[in-house]
Image 1: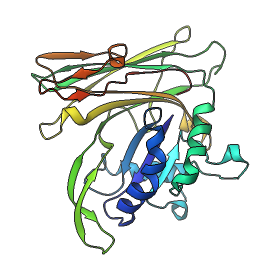
Image 2 (image 1 turned 30 degrees about the vertical axis):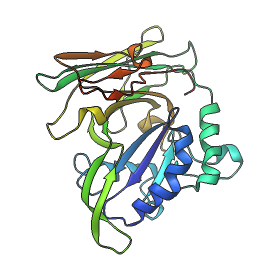
Image 3 (image 1 turned 180 degrees about the vertical axis):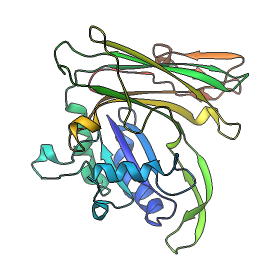
Length: 278
């Protein structure tokens, strides 16, 4: 499963909501649930503020439904399994005493799609290739189109321009910042052959980005254009960390199961392969 957290440096709610409300509930699930932070209208937004366009699309274009910060689990309307109606797939931050139920429900939902991530990285040119592959159970999706979305994220990103509770601009550390989105906003279509798929994308790392704090996240979802905002669910996802090594480094999903250390002796988390249903 994947949580997408919508935030902005112009919202003074973000530090309190993320640190005190959202993260304590998420922390117990962080090894099983990926996390992507979408920044709206600030220095970390991608393109021409594509994150605002995304959240508006999930609100069916109704800006009165949009509030920041907010969260979205698997792009699925929240509480639907608890019998509480909710039309849009994102919601305000859920208090940690209650959020565990949502993560457990998401993790318990069966899936017919597997996702593996492999990557190469050439330190000499600060570029690499990420490959996403997997299998779709026979007959499970019929002729329905599925999309893949790939993000390059960075943790421990310092800023001095996060709005604070006293409305001043101050210091803050952001995690899960989207540095690159390697696909269109709602993903690139998968070419499936006898249930199998594989697609590759080039990526690069800017000098100011810290490779040891970066990871790739890939998610496979139903198509927003044909299914609509209520049914563009994430079917499965996987992530893997990038490490600092000499020369060319290749991290694969299988290698990601082991502990890996960089040249300075720092351990790099490498969870490249996610089993079905996670």
